[in-house]
Image (cartoon, rainbow, N blue to C red; front, side):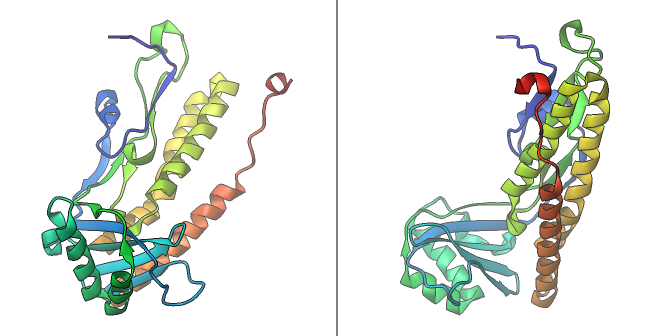
Length: 264
């Protein structure tokens, strides 16, 4: 074993975070999500409308879609309640590709026909029954700091899925991770510049993370229940508005500046 001392330890090791367990991060909310999301990459799939980057297709108990990536390849995906996954839960292989194409076709015959006309390039990937979980994102390890450093905030922080995870039906998981990393790095930056302000900075990170995540988290849980298509579409519009507001808020943050001594 090797002992490493630090003023703060950051856990960014995913929804099954071991760091969160070792650090004793309190679970503030945890609920099951009985859905599955599966996807693959397909070449040469024509878009239904020229110039439209994303397609969402909603049907009872199904949410399918497509978005272009690069070199004429598109990601094609399907979300549905776990009870309807059937063959998609089998090990990766040709049978699972056909199961995904059949499920997409059932949800949207037009999308299914276009996907079948393309070339499936990758195995089907995905997961089912991933949890909705919110953990306390900051805490102390040793009062007064490791090794007796005397710092007022010697502890830990969580970012990304380690601190907050929601059902993938709404996507944007990497956006959540970037958001939390941006919020945390600003808190740490302030702490390093002014050690007397570090407790306040970390508390601000916790509160801001909660506030920015709350709306999308609630919308995700509602969408993962697969309400009627008309209500599902209304929730999707609300989600788009919420994500737009979040992006605008992050973009409004002032650019970081270097202390004069560091700049010199």
